[in-house]
Amino acid sequence: MRTLGRLLWLSITFLLVMFTILFATSNKTLTTVYLWPFDSALTAPTWLLILSSFVIWRIAECYIDLGAVAGDSGKAMASSRTFQ
Image (cartoon, rainbow, N blue to C red; front, side, top):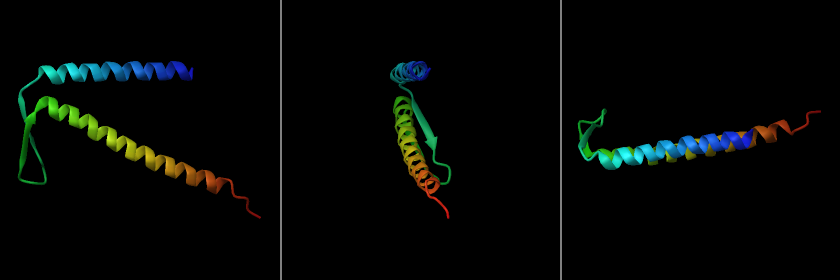
């Protein structure tokens, strides 16, 4: 069951990445992103914004996973203590 879940996750991820790459390479228009708290705007090609959003998402995901690992190890250590 675990192998089937991983295979399904891998195939969905692969399809999403392929769709994103196809969309990004075919869309060459410029997109303006307004940086809300500031009075400035960023104009970049759409493909660059899409691909950079995936990079930012991956960095955030790794950061969250590291926090989860650190939190789990602390809980495991606390539960292994014996109280007298």
